[in-house]
Length: 396
Image (cartoon, rainbow, N blue to C red; front, side, top):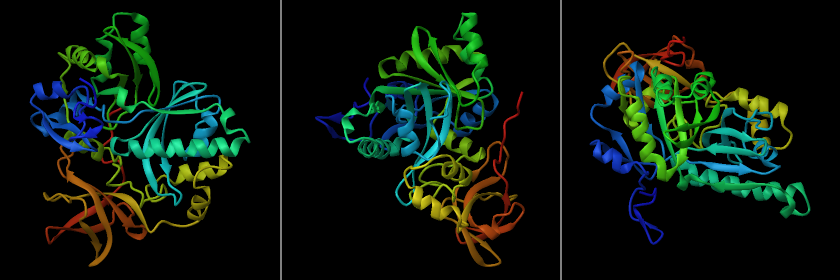
C-alpha cells in the first residue's frame, strides 16, 4: 500500500494513509486526522500504551513525518545559511535538533537533521509542516545559489523531498535496546546497536531490510527510529513486533505519544511552537546566541540580532497541581487576579499522578515555585510553576 492511497488523479479525497494503515486497522486502532494524515490515535487504552512505554516499550508509526535530503559539496554551507543551528561542524553519523525560522524569526518548524555523509544531510520536519519546510528550503537554495556565484547553476547543491517514499517506525521505552538486539544474530551488529549514542545514527539490517537506525525520540525514554522505503514498512513492523514478544512491546498511538512528550517537557508545534513564537520565546536563546557568534550570514540574522538584546514578553514554563482537574490549551493563568499567561498543553500525568501543563508566562511569573491560578471551566485552580522536564528517565 502506498502512502497516497486516498489520493486519486492528483486530488486528495481525504487524509493520507501511511504504508502501515492496514496494520493499524487490523489491530483495531482508532484513527484521527493529524497533519493531513489518517493516524492511529490509540489501539485500546491510551493509558496502558503510555505506561507500556514507561515500563517496557511501545512501537509507533511515524511515517507521516517528513524527510528532505540535502546533498552536494555546498550542502553544509547551505544548511548553515538556511537553518538556525550550525551544521557544517557536525560529524557524519550525528544528529542535531534545530529550528527553521521565517524572516521575522517566527518558528516555521522544529526539526532534526542527520549528517549522512560529508556532502549529504537528512532533514526531518513535522508532518503538518513538511510542505512548508520543503518549500522554504527549495526557495532558500535558489537564493543561496544566486548569492554564491554569478553562475548559479554551478553551485553543487540539491534539495529533494523524499517524504512520500519514506516510512518511519519508532521503538521507545526502557526495553527498546533489548528489542533491537533481539533482531540480530551477528555480534558486530549487536555491538553497533549497544554503542549507538543519543542523537546519532547508523546503518542496520533487520530481517533482510536495510534501515537507517537513529537514537533520538520524543517520549523521554531511550528509543530508536528506523527509516526505510515504504514497500518494506509492513515487514519491518512485523519483525520488530516479533522481536518485542517477551519484552512487553505494544503498539502505541498519538494519544500516548502526546502524554509522553508532555511529561518530558518537549514542545509540540502548533501548541508551544508557531510562527508567532521565536526561538528565544521557546527557550532556545542559546541556539540564537551561538548562531550570531559562529555564523556570518544566515536566514533572519537581522531579526534575531534585534531579539537577542531583548527579554521575551513571555517564556515557556511548566505547571503542576496537587488537585485533580487538568488545565487545557487556552486556559488563562493568573497571579493575584491579574493575567500572566496562557496554557499551551495540559493533561493529567499518568506517570506522576497529578495534572501537568506547559504555558507561556510573563517572565516575572515564570520562576519555579511561583503560585499561580488557572481558569478551568470558569473556576480558579491552584497550580505551581515547575522546572522542566516534569519527568526524567532513570539513567543506567
